[in-house]
Length: 114
Length: 112
Image 1 (tube, one colour):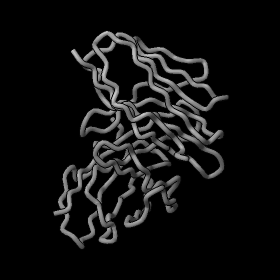
Image 2: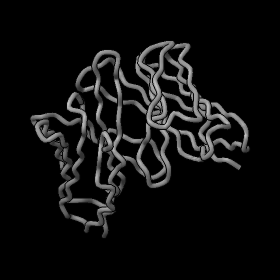
Image 3: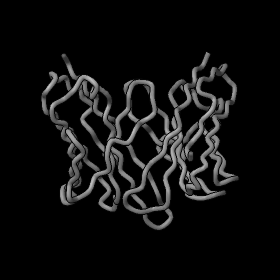
Image 4: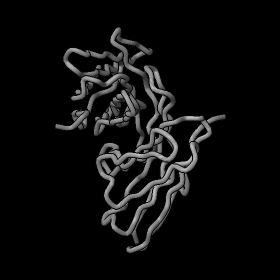
């Protein structure tokens, strides 16, 4: 079955370290997204990518970086420049543009700074 | 102004009550609209897509008003299991853009 796989589900980071969250989809989707969710808050867009080798900043891109070298993969790196990285991170993808598209989500990754 | 706005709640309602959520969006180019349900510490799950003609799925009814740029979700005969956060999602696309914007979510707590 097609879907999105995020890993790791739980991750601990020491201050000053970079960490990378993996997001892989086998849905043949062009568009992929990374969101951050803080407790009691909604989803805020970090980065998104419409196509391979292209990506755009979302509302809270500072301290994060992404790459899109393959259609199925959109990893997110939380850099040491992100001062408050503890949060729930969600990866999503959507098919070709048009009404009635379904958004697919990964199961999320919990990142904690220790 | 945020691109997508929701009343964060919480909405505390008794079982059997009818509850309505609204969500407004600012970009008139927005094309597709959805309601998602999110349980604590889980990823969002699709509840229903929203169309101008309105759509109903059991106890849930969704409506889109393009002129006023809002979408609504009505839940009838609330169940305890309806307790969750309800997220409205707007997908707008055009040219090189295919952007998904989420509202902050509305927390619903159904009381016995």
